[in-house]
Image (cartoon, rainbow over all chains, first blue to last red; front, side, top):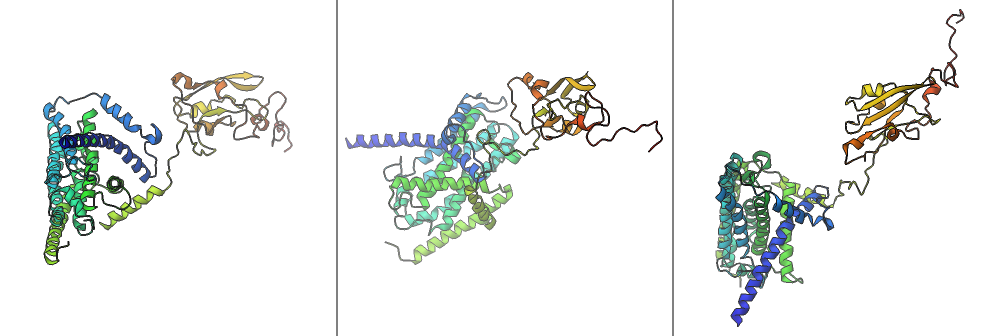
Length: 324
Length: 170
C-alpha cells in the first residue's frame, strides 16, 4: 500500500512539475519582454489581457498556426529532431532538481549532479544538429559556434562544481542542499558560483553569450531556417534552460529551499526567480563579446579560476579540522 | 570586468525610472501648435474664404496632391473646387509657406486614418473651416491693392491713394 502511495506521489510530482514548467516557460517570454521594457524605460507588451499576460497565448496561437515548413534543402529527419532534443534534454535535466524535500521528481538521485551535466551536455546536439541539418551556411556557423562554446563552457561548469561536491561529499542534489543548512555554498565557493553561473549562461546560449544566434552577424544562427512551433520549441527550450540554470544555481550555491520564516518552496521560488531576473538584466545590459574574446575569456580566465578554486578548497579541507 | 558590473548596475537603476513611452490612444502626446498635420482652408475675419485660387500651393506641392480650379465672382477669385489627396500628402508644409493669403494652413491634428483610400481625398467642404486659423486679424483683400466691390484702389489698410501717373506733381 505504501508502495502505491509512493507511485501516486511520484506521478503527481511529474505531472504537476511538467505542467508548472510548461506554463512558466512561455510566461517567462512575457516576463522577459516586460522586464526588458522597463529596463529600457518603456512598457513592453501590455495590450493583450491584464498587463499583457495574454500576449503569451497570442504568441502561442501564432506559432501553432504558422506553416510547418521544412526547407527543401534541409535534412528533414534531423531537422525535426533537433528542436525536440533541445526541449527534451532540459526537461529531463529539470527532473533532478529538488525544489523542496517533497517537491521534485528524482531529487534524491545519487548521481544527480552528473546527470544534470550529462543532460546539458546532450543539449549541445540540438544546436549542432539544427545548424547542420538546416544546410545553410549561417546556421552551420551558428551550430559550429554553439558546439565549441558549449563543449568548452561545459568544462568549467563541471569543474566549478567540484568544490561543491568536495564540500558535500555527494553527487546527490538533496544532500548538497542539506549540507548548506548552516552556510550557503556561495560564501565558501564564491569562485565556483561565479564560474558556474557564467557557464550556465553560455550553456543556455543567452545574451551576452548568445554567439550561436548572434543576430547581427548570423541572422539567427542555428535556428535561421526554423519557423512555427519548431522555432517555438527552441524558444521554450531556451527558457526552460534559464529556469534550469537558475534552479541549479539556487540548489548548488544558495541553499536551495533553506531560508527563514517563509515555507521552503517559496524560498526556492524566490531564489530561482532572482536568478531568472538576473538573466534578463544581463540581456538588457551587456553587449555580446567577439567570438575569440569569448573563448579566450573561458580558457584563459575561467579555467584557471576553477582550478584555483579546486586547489584552495582542497587545501582548506585538508588543513582545517572537518566541520561537524 | 568592472565596467560590465557598472553597466549592470546602471541598467538595473533604469527599472525605477519613468517610462518614456506615451501610451498614445489613451494618452495624447503634446503637439506643438505648429505641428504639421491635417490641412485646412481658413476664412478671413469677415467670414469669407481666404483662398484666391492662385495655384501657388499646387505648384509648391512636391507630391502634387493639391488640385483646384479658379473661378471669378465680382472681381474676386475663388476656388471652384479645392481637393487635397491626403493619401499622397507628405505634410511638408510647403503649401502653407507658398500661400500669399494665409488661406491654407496645417493643423496639429493627425488622426485621419480611413479604411478606404478614397475617403482620404478631401474636398473643399471638408477642408474649409469657419475660423481664421493662426492669423486671426489678417484679411488679404483689406491690405491688398486689388479693387473689389466696396473697396477701391488706395483704400486698403496701410495703403496710400494711387499716384496720378499723368500729373506732374510728386
